[in-house]
Picture: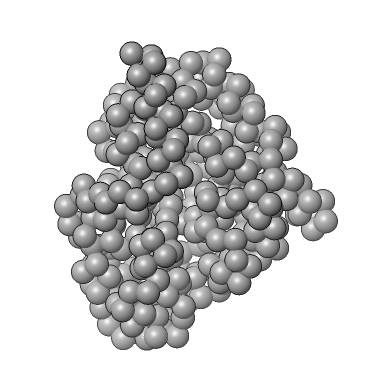
Length: 328
């Protein structure tokens, strides 16, 4: 069976980089409402929501971070430096992305030249599926920490609900006890996966990271998490660019024209407005800056906007390797 699991892990790793499947697992759910029940046509006044989310640990996690998945080596470093210079203070990384060393070098250069202390930068990494024993978890964590050039990580996530999650979680709890990691959480966990973890967890997950955008709102799950004081982070909030083509959607463009903003602002604001942090990925300097522009924090979608975006919900995932993780 071990050989079979290793084979599945290998297949999963390949699928991680060649995403072509079509997956529609979720039924339609209700979309978020506009904050403060903003009336249709109301002006885009400054939003009340702060640019950071306070975790259950007490730490502040910036509401907009830079995703580094699919950002290749030789390019990701410049993207990180551009983002930090533009005001980002949240970087999302992972062992399997294969670029942590370059991310760490860029972070070090920025802190050295800008005077911004490392303590102001929130850094996340993730534990890959093949590391599940206590020894393997500690080794994987230390590998990411060293490559990133950090004394500690702000957040460490189990990347997928695969293998012996209980042992991995207990090892991660020890990392928190030792001060090596400030908070721990999970990524790509379904509600029932999270329930199983909560049944034995000594330290509750501070964060759940999942795919979220208007075509996959997962509204009931998001509401449950926020009610339980578990922060939510949306990956692929722009629908993976050309893959999902949400940035080209007529509804999104219509709302963008109405508010005088870019389509990306509408999509990011949709998640932010319902209390969800976002980690859009880009290596384009202009798009990196656009995803952290003032409009992202100040635009307010009204009830008409939310209802129009709700109609886009078809349960479509743009990261279809997701289900393959559960085979192991």
